[in-house]
Length: 71
Image 1 (spheres, rainbow, N blue to C red):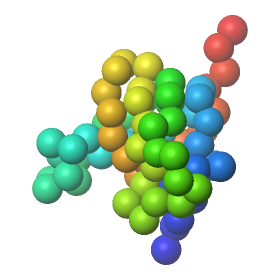
Image 2 (image 1 turned 60 degrees about the vertical axis):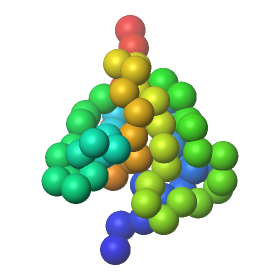
Image 3 (image 1 turned 120 degrees about the horizontal axis):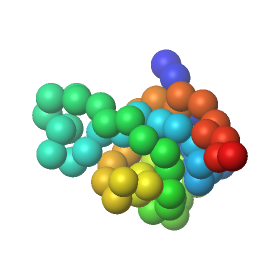
Image 4 (image 1 turned 90 degrees about the vertical axis):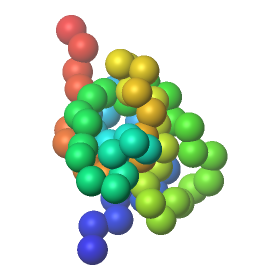
């Protein structure tokens, strides 16, 4: 089982991720974006670390894609 999305230390602003929005939890539809803020305070969360994307959307990280590098 892949647990990298459950560990807060693995999530940083600028990271490109796929999250599940609260409204999409029943269907599992994922939304892609870049992390702006980390909202989960605990070091580990079993359903994924909650973040706010640069788009303003809030959800739990399901997949870490790669670092986003702004030029």
